[in-house]
Image (cartoon, rainbow, N blue to C red; front, side, top):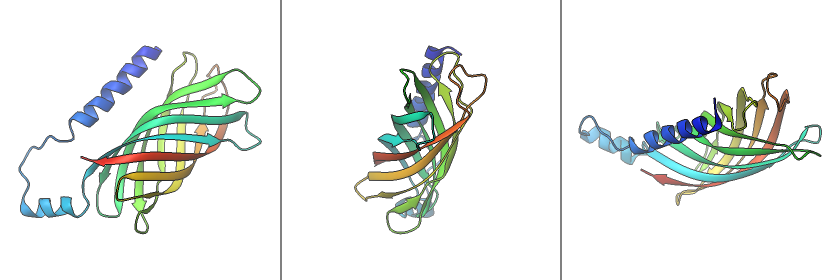
Length: 183
């Protein structure tokens, strides 16, 4: 797939997700309204992140930005979907690996504001000839009532051997700072 097609498809998906969250097929009953006030709601957030790789990795550091959609199933459990941009910098090389991560996960609040956030997904390589097969992550964080969200995670990458920019498996320790808005 060409780079422009990937960027267009990702943008179109994000726009569709963000514009359809307010559509309602039925009116809300009293019990539905009380569920929304008790924590069941959509949130959208934007964040920036940066990370470092372990000393044995062929990568040096990474950074990026993301947009995250979150649906609160209950007061303590949410499902998440996110997309964005990530750039990984090779050690001792001018090459960079850029991709669009598409992730789905669960956000479980274990105490007031504190959460764990495992996620799985894939990355769409921006450069032709580069492939990314699988991304996995697990992390912890804190979300303030104001919407500020700070988290730390391990994010692992497993690449396809057919990629021009080949690395079998690597991962980074990553810090994310974001802000969430209730819809």
